[in-house]
Length: 332
Ligand SMILES: NC(=O)c1ccc[n+]([C@@H]2O[C@H](COP(=O)([O-])OP(=O)(O)OC[C@H]3O[C@@H](n4cnc5c(N)ncnc54)[C@H](OP(=O)(O)O)[C@@H]3O)[C@@H](O)[C@H]2O)c1
Ligand SMILES: [Zn+2]
Image (cartoon, rainbow, N blue to C red; front, top):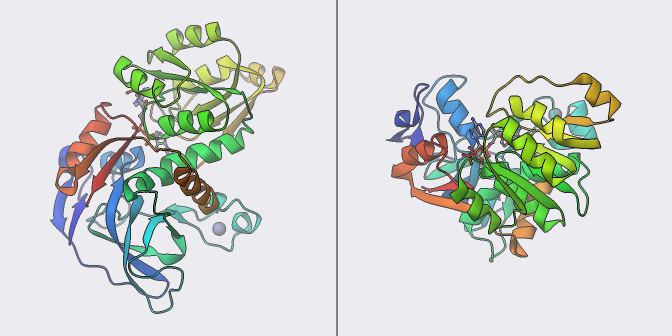
């Protein structure tokens, strides 16, 4: 079968399309004929920074398609079922698995292998898709929407809260804007692209700030008033910015580091103003089930562009060049 393959660390031009071994499901496993696999910045990090273990490496976390074959003991799904994969890999027995939520597992890992014609997965991690949810829409949900949804829960975001999303036009950003909108909050989002911000206003953004300069953004946000929650996937200098604009007792949740892995913050501001700074990674299979249900009831995940498998390198280039909007979906 054909697959997108990384052999060495590199740029988008290092993505190859090759023949790889056909998967066979063992006990507890299923093979999914992949109709749609969405890209994440996570895949770009692996491409640029390298993968663990021996290559070649087949990337792709966000898998939706049709079950092709199942292992002997699998009852959860059957060939022909339309499914989306929850990419969580957990041990099921550590203290964090027992206490939950499952995404805090001490052995937590993420599935890879979806950018291929067929994907070998843990059958227990498959969710059935209602007829009204396309596999393209479903592939957009797992990483970005699940992460943003869990971040909102971590922040105790409530009705009418004003939520600041720096870098609001990518996977997590657009998901955050849509989910805040769907749950009665208001959003402030940033991008250096006026065109992307106009598209974002079309899916529910309340206040657009066209900049990626933290000082300019700080001034613009402060003019808008108090921020209750910051959802921050950029990291770096956007951490200090988020803390600066956060109101007293507000919460900032951080899930990423696109703009840098280290940050500085004003400790006095943190304690004197009772602010909360929270880390968060991914979400639970239950979160994904909720999102599939929301998609069946009207939430339309934003797919900015679609590509055949042969053009996977172009999809990576679009993400790398910041020309992407929302989710980029590859159709193997
Ligand atoms: N911990 C977790 O569970 C988790 C889950 C999902 C994602 N993440 C992390 O969250 C981040 C976002 O992931 P994603 O898949 O949503 O990525 P993405 O789609 O590539 O995000 C694009 C967004 O980031 C902005 N951006 C890109 N580079 C930037 C820079 N150098 N400075 C400022 N803004 C920049 C873009 O702004 P413009 O519109 O101006 O181009 C755009 O709004 C990544 O770091 C990813 O690893 C973590
Ligand atoms: Zn565990």
